[in-house]
Amino acid sequence: MKESIIFLHGVVGNKSAFKTEIDTLKDKYNCIAYDYYNSENLGADCPFSLELLLQQLYDQYKRNGIQKAHLCTLSFGCIVAMAFNKKYPEMVMSLTFVGGYFCGVPSTLHKNRIKLLKEKPQYDHKAWLKRYAAAINPNKKQIQENSEAIFVKNALLLHPNVFERAVRVQLEYNSKIDLMNAKSPILWVMGEYDELYKETLVELEQYVPHVEYHELQNAGHVAHIHQPDQFMSIFQPFLKKVSNQRSLALEPIEI
Image (cartoon, rainbow, N blue to C red; front, side, top):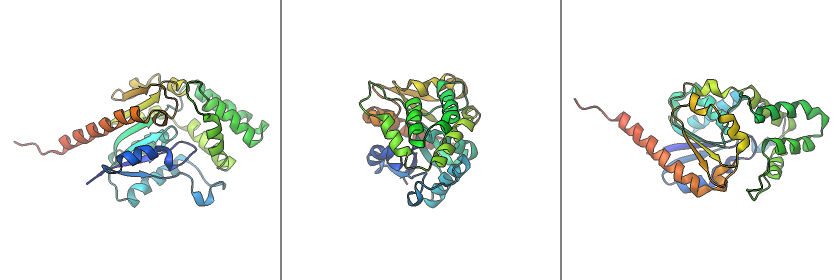
C-alpha cells in the first residue's frame, strides 16, 4: 500500500505549488494537494482562521481514507502543518517545510507585518498589496523572476478581508510552542537567498534538535521551484529514510 503525501501551498497561490514533485512521486506515493480557498467563491468575504485550516486538512485525511501521511508545505503552509502535528501527532509521518519560518519571534519579517497592517488604512488595497509584497516577498537580483508581481496577482484573487485574516494568523501564531515537543521527523529546506525568512530560524536547532536542515544553492523563497532537482535529491531520500525507520519500529521483536 502506498504511503501518502499531502502538499500544502503558501498564503496565496493554489494546489499547483508542488505540481512537479507530485508528477515525479505519484507512482510511488498517494499524492494529495488541495486549495485553501474555494474556487467557487474565490474573492468572497469568507471566514478564514487557523482552526478552519486544520479542519480542512483533517477532512482531507478522512475523505481519502488516510490514517497517517507525510506533510510537505510551502511557506505559510508550515503553520498549518505545525499546528496539525501538535493537535494530531499520530496522523503525521513526517514534516517537510520549504521556505518555512517561525512566527512570534523577533525578526524583520515580524516587524514588517506589524508595520504593514498598521499602515493599511492609508492605501487602496492594490497599492497596499504591492507594499506588502515588496516587504515580505522581495525580488532578488539573483533570481530571474518577478516574485512581487506574482504574489500581488495571486493575492488580488482573494477578498481583502480574507487576505488580512491570513496575515493576522501569522502574527498570532507561536511556532516555538507547537514545535518544541514535536517528535515527527522534520526536513527544513530554504533557499540560500531567502535571508528574510531564514532570519526567523536563529533558534531552530534549539527548539527542534532533530531537524534535518538544508539550503538550496541559487534559490530563493520558493526553493523547490527554483531548484527542483536539488530539492528532490534531498526530499526523496528523506521520505525513504522515514519509511525505513517506521518499518523497523513496526517489526516484531523476536525473543
